[in-house]
Amino acid sequence: MADHPTGGDAPLVDLRSDTVTRPTVGMRAAMAAAEVGDDVYGEDPTVNALEAEVAALFGHEAALFAPTGSMANQIALQLVVPPGDELLCDADAHVVTYEVGAAAAYGAISSRTWPAVGADLDPGVVEAMIRPDGYFAVPTRAIAVEQTHNRGGGGVIPLPTLRELRRVADTAGLALHCDGARIWHAHVADGVPLQEYGALFDTLSVCLSKGLGAPAGSLVVGSAAQITRARVLRKRMGGGMRQVGVLAAAGRYALTHHLARLADDHARAARLAEALAGSGVLAGPVRTNIVPLDLTGHRLDARALATAARAEGVLLSVLGPRTARLVTHLDLDDAAIDHASKILPHLLTP
Image 1 (tube, rainbow, N blue to C red):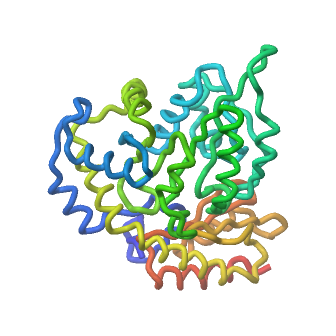
Image 2 (image 1 turned 60 degrees about the vertical axis):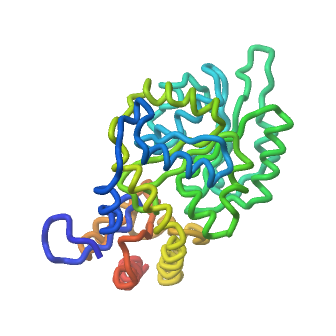
């Protein structure tokens, strides 16, 4: 359990997000010992090593370190969609829900969405939406998917679905982007090799602070030519940093020490779901580290539940008036899950 944020001694179970973690002792030591240089000049050896490592993990030529997942996504989208052209994604996709209109504001990208179905997307529905050049319509240039799907409750898009989507993209001459902020969780949950995922996408963004426990950082993954252009886009968006090897070292440590242990987070999320099974609020199956809650028809709305839970030492994320989320992560042990598993079912009693 984490220390109480108010400074008191009461235990706190923070289930809001897997971004709330703090660097471990080993990660802090790796950061302190990091060899650094000026990354804008391409001279930070730890950043260079991280970029090469992540590119190799996904079977791509190159990668670029960025300070945030939103920036990594938006750089990638600008690589595959020219200004004024169209991106297809789902209505709950992070790139159009939680990135404050950046695709339009920075890339002049027009976006169109299919109905939100989380990880259960139908490639046939996507294929029917594609607009070709001509007749003054906005031509579709790329498709984006999210693996795992955040608002889809941590759902994992099945490999056959992704392969069919790749076929759809190839047939239409489109690029395929993966917002892979939690692709590590999909890899651990389904056992799909990261290179197999990488082979399906023209570009990916992958995050080091969601689940893996690094304090910051994401990477854009693509071809060498794409990453050369991505460096310009990163600088334009204010993401050129200097001796950032101290953060890259955290990412390298996370990939070595915190990837396989994601299975522990999945197991603890499953325990939470089991504890809540009788409450009637589970929004769907729990595949990874996210437990989605649908409070439609319940006496408590999401904000009321969050307020009541906080009073009992449990924090959760409010996603909408009747939608909430629990997320497990490396700062939560079995005792923390035990506590939440007692408190939440009690609060959710009809």
